[in-house]
Image (tube, rainbow, N blue to C red; front, side, top):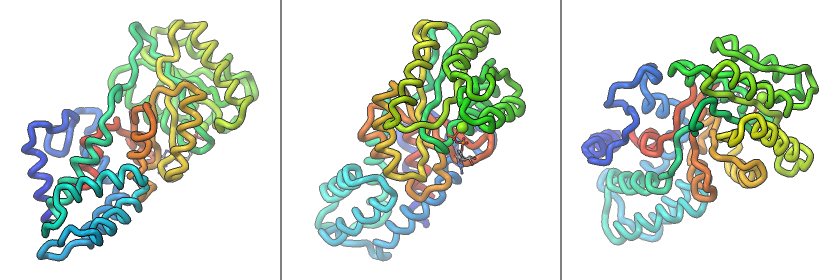
Length: 337
Ligand code: GDP
Ligand code: MG
């Protein structure tokens, strides 16, 4: 345990300390409950257990010789977090380059792993898009059950607590329950919602939501959609139509198309993201349910294979259980004690 703790001290001395609030910096109001770092750490507990315990088990108190056996074992343990062959291979190679033939301690290796993961997770455009003039229109897409509606609730709460005015659009018109679910969120948050009768064309709800947002001077319109697969041609066309009518009402919108991926789906999430990001013109990812997964390493292949930034992560079902994705904080939360 001591190793992990001292690593934390090391990293806080670095000049490249994360800008985002961490455990050592006072949390902003929006992250009052334990801060971003604490929240991520708690949410990532399952992955932390796998990664931490497994890697620690590779070491004896007197250290461990970095040879082929060690490198193979390290690789196998990294893979268990679902980070994939590419990222795990790169970490193994870097550890080999730095330490091969030497006896090393856990701390040194963890530091190298941390640096490498941080580099691999670096991304541009991680912030939520903002229209030149409001409203910013956000469309939320993904497969059934991935966490779209819940993520919209959490994101909306986050934005409202920052003082923004928002309108929700109940664009999942397939199921009455979906409209109800979003309505309940809107009541909890205290924001406007646009709904249509069950079965109505979701494009019309999207249009009206955008219209409403313009009308009342909202900062954001966030539009829910029914779950779909990239292989469902008709539903993908429907999404295209939704985009088209939003753009018709407000040229340039939607400004953000967020793909919600379920972290518990592991590597499957990656193939979902591929199809969707191409077909739906996605601009960013919300990785939901990281709290329920021991495979939080999946964010690495997602970053590796897509141009899409991960913008938010879901860390539970509660209204506060979502944070902005920050690579430095995420990595620290994954590996520090
Ligand atoms: P949708 O079909 O994509 O709209 O998915 P929902 O938002 O209805 O979520 C499906 C289930 O996943 C619900 O039971 C949610 O409470 C749950 N869920 C969503 N996000 C998270 C999360 O970040 N963590 C956990 N543990 N559960 C989540
Ligand atoms: Mg839903």
